[in-house]
Amino acid sequence: MSFKTLSFAAIAAASFALPAFAESIIAVDDPYARVSTKMSKSGAAFMVIENSGDEDDRLIDVKSDIAKKVELHTHKDDGNGNMSMVHVEEGFVIPAGGKHMLMRGGDHVMFMGLNKGLDHGDIVGVTLVFEKAGDVTLEIPVDLERKPMHGMKHGN
Image 1 (cartoon, rainbow, N blue to C red):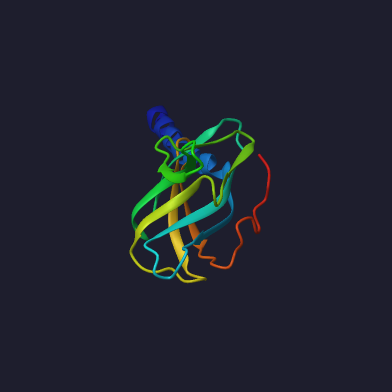
Image 2 (image 1 turned 90 degrees about the vertical axis):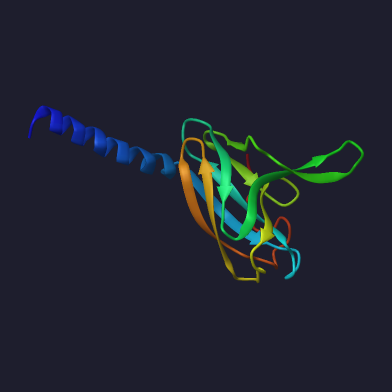
C-alpha cells in the first residue's frame, strides 16, 4: 500500500470516528411527550440533556414527522403577567460538564399541527440537532399521566 493510499485511509477512518465520539458526549435522560387532550393539534416533549464533554454545545434544531411544524420553544412573560410560548431560533446551550432541562413551563420541544392524535404509551420519533454533536435520534414515550415535575432530576 502506498503512503498516499495509507494516509487517505487513515484520514477517512478518523473522519468516520469523530461524529461517533461527538455524539457520545451528549446524553438524554427521562424524555417524555404529552398532549393536553386526545383531540389536541399540538403537543410537547420534555427531557434532560447532559453534556459530558469539555466544550459547550448547542441544541439548534429538532425534527419529527409527527407534526407539520416542530420547533424549540420557551415561555416568556410579557411583563404584565401574561405568559406566551415563543420559538427559540438560536436554540439552547448545553454547558460543558452540565445539563439543560426541557420542562413544562420552560424550554421544550413543540409539536404544532400533529398528524395524528397521541395516546398514552405511543412512541414519538424525534431527532435533536446539535451544533457540535450532530444528530441524536430518540424514541420518546407519550406519558399523559405524569405530573409537571414527576421524574425530573434537578441540577444545572
